[in-house]
Length: 107
Image (tube, rainbow, N blue to C red; front, side, top):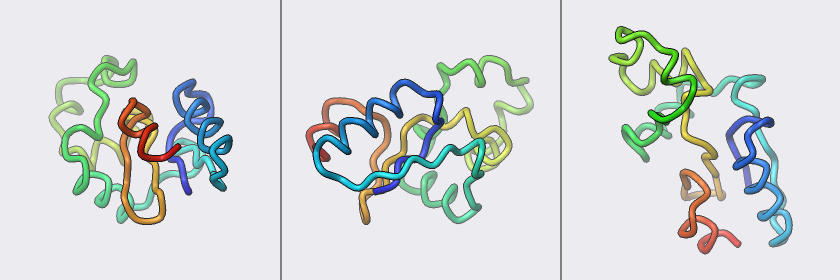
């Protein structure tokens, strides 16, 4: 199982800890240290649409209007920390965030 996020993100760390506690072999990929490939970004956008962009993040608030108008894929490629986190690849389905529904499905 791969968790895409940031190593400094509390939600990502909670997700990794809970998934490991449930017996999953989990690897955290820090999207700032290891940027996503264009194929990964396209898969995330195809699955989650505009929800892939966290419009409440500090990164989003710091963007110019021109940057905010970019397509989601271009925005995530240019500013990986604007991606809603975590994105969890469970070996098939992708999950976004760490809400009760995702926790119930994976733990």
